[in-house]
Image (cartoon, rainbow, N blue to C red):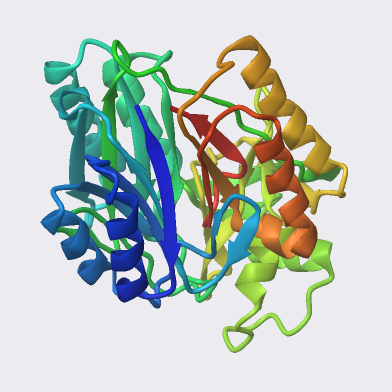
Length: 363
């Protein structure tokens, strides 16, 4: 398989870059598209569709190829995978039936591939991402490989979109099912946000909607913990500060804690929706943003993946939490450059998304 990355700041620039990439006879079959909400994703989809290329895409909070980070742009990874080795699925979930949707996708994929792996992106910040994962697990088993993220929208916290050749949705899922019998896919996840303070109990929640922690509205206890000011709907930066700097960490009996940032505030009762399920009665701790040494942790994680599981890859995709941009600032380029220099692959494409921090995927 051969991979090429292209980028641009308009549909016209992407058209020119696509033509240049195909000038040597290269014929991609799949495009993984990360772009700003400011870009015309329908026009770019038509451009790729006219070239006979299947599209997997979502809007982001920033885009980068190699170590160059940008905003308001388009970053595309082109792959010439055999069309018999992958399928693209698109579903919407206006009824919030997340697990049912991915269960259905997994069953369809199993009809085509004996051992499918899944590459997904979802939209809408109320989405329970963990429920999406459970739907795949129900059908394909606990060892199923699922990688992905939620879409972003340039930090506006308004509308995020996922899309494919002829469909797009602000409350839906786009999914690539890959035949693991033909394509090797491996990944590693890392975080860096440090848990601090005492362990607290979630006293009221439904799915990913958290109402109270220690019988205190979750927004109020977060406000007190973080020393936040101007806590009102008029504060446009409040949600970003809560999600990026003071996410909850869900403690688990087995395995590492998982991040549960608050993404949507319900001002009626000061509750909020998190990125994944937070069961009532579960234990949580608050977090602090990562120190700069977290960059070394990420790079070492990728190096270990290369040394132990995938010495040579044709492409590498990195989903980076939007909070990393805010916490690390310009130094984030050092983290990306370090991943590139580990020599795992010849083609690197990355995109900061809404959440699910730090998930590199080698194909």
